[in-house]
Image (tube, rainbow, N blue to C red):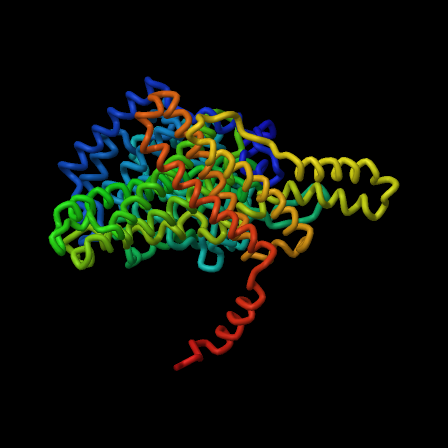
Length: 577
């Protein structure tokens, strides 16, 4: 994203500003692309119906070569590649909808396709120069080359800055010498093209030598690139996951991606971009399994009633549906932000990934619960979808790390304001202007609040709930900063509450915007179910927000930390009855 990037809706929310023009009206795909997308979806559905046997893929721990080859021929390897390089050049919305479909058909296949294009060659699309794109993108788009993303190492997972793989620049011979290894690389055993992140020594403007991360385009035919054995995984058994080794690999200097020392930023932006595909795939899997469960509970009888007639089953079905609707609303609002141009969507994509993977995991588990013992049996798909779905909360940034990112990035701007205030307090005469500006803002915030644009009257309660608790997020974030100062980076339990509150608020505004647009489009009566879901979801969400924000100030964090330290020291559960 450029320096002209518009502000993030959610970052602004932390500062008490409602940028409703970013989220209203709810985005829609252009008619021509929507029509093209439907044709692509229909093509894939027909192909999957005739050729993809997920049970066999899981049993054999391999996607058949003929399946991958056919998908290459159909063009599904180049969905996000611009048309001038042989791809479809799909928008973020269309791309995410395709991955929703892939995730529902077979998660192993979805992750293979996603590792190839959501992250494998995405850095090349975003940061490559023209020569690099012309050289590699046509082959990646056609599937002649498969891609993998190489960031994680044995000693560097979420702490990506701790990577040890090194690249030594040899200007005389025009190459980098690359050495190191990467672990848990999806497509590691079948890829020919790798986006690799490695440290190199760079002399800064002060003449000091410093290790910085750079990004490189590496191909297997350069020599010295080998793959380890296939990992024996809990789920996603059909996908290839291996260690990848780089031993004295001679990488041409022209294969440096972007600027020297800017690799960390490239890595993070690729993951920001790729998280929407993962979110889409997660809800796609849940939609398919919900449909499977609905077929069972509508037929299966107990005590002379179908399972679907029991209230506790009704609650499960309704909650899964509400969670899907809200999360889907978040995802496609965010993809719309991406498609609209230069908008900072880093927080929103992280929120979508966290929410989608968690409601999917809970929902898949509930689908299995609804069908009872049948769901535990291997011949039915429930256990497989559950196993496949578990990794999604770890992939592409663990949900814990993404919560920390959401909270800390959200309060960063507010922290800069408060630092100015701290300086002003030390020199009150010089800082008079800063202090009076802050006082005016503080008073204004307590007697009024910004409001989102008018929405349909049926959504007025949800609107007020959002506005009220959006204001409280701002105040809670500020209090957390004032009470903790720089130590806020270590107060992860507080960060989690702020992140979860912000995520619920973003989900609320996404649902309100979507339903308001639907009412405009088809009328209140025909949107009755959507209005009902909006009402229920927002009522549930504001209560969660309230609880999380109250616990920013009053909580049991010290007691929890003390207990955890004791248990870790004991190395067991020591309280036998």
